Image 1 (cartoon, rainbow, N blue to C red):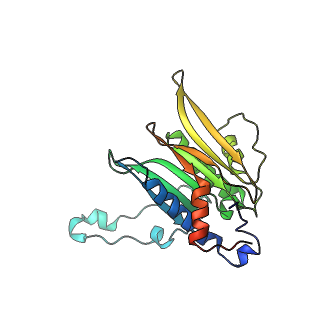
Image 2 (image 1 turned 30 degrees about the horizontal axis):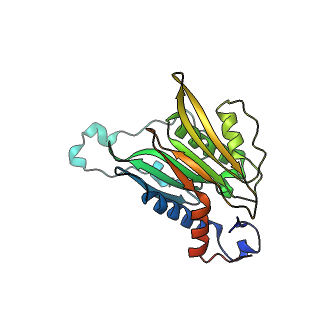
Image 3 (image 1 turned 60 degrees about the vertical axis):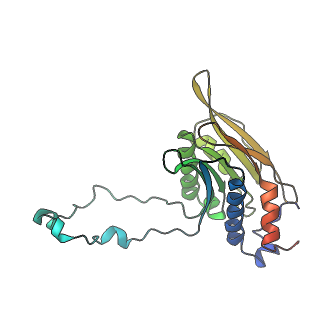
Length: 235
């Protein structure tokens, strides 16, 4: 089928990119659930324009006063020691893979990058911080960037955040798979990176789940299926 530009006209004026990303994450999870062994499952997680409810920080949560002492009823926190601005990840489009062996435990994730993830330095930092946390916990990770309207390369920024010396990936559109592996009793980061352009087929990449299991992620297959099911027009 070949990759289409979901972020510029004419397609962007006929279909919403966030609806496509939402559907793609759903079909990726559905495809994974056909092959994951017993004890594992995949779930899509798509959230756009995430905002924190400020009232949740300023209002006291009502509780059963009969279970409280007089001191607890009257207690309120002091003014904070410091108040600093912080960037919260505003868009999340991912597929999370869980193991149920010790309750639902995250063991792998596929991140579909959105325009807001690349928009400003603080948002890019929030995204790469999440990816860094995944990798440092040994969670398998794939990131996929088909966003054509922003030039930032989040893979390169992730490598800088991890202080890893590696040639920059000179590509606007790409997908990268990451695995934390032991070599000579020392943790190493293995990665598989694939660059592509509009009109190209998307690659198959390995998703290494925490614990050793890995699965092939056929991005082209699920992308084609999503375009077909969503009636994305040929443009």
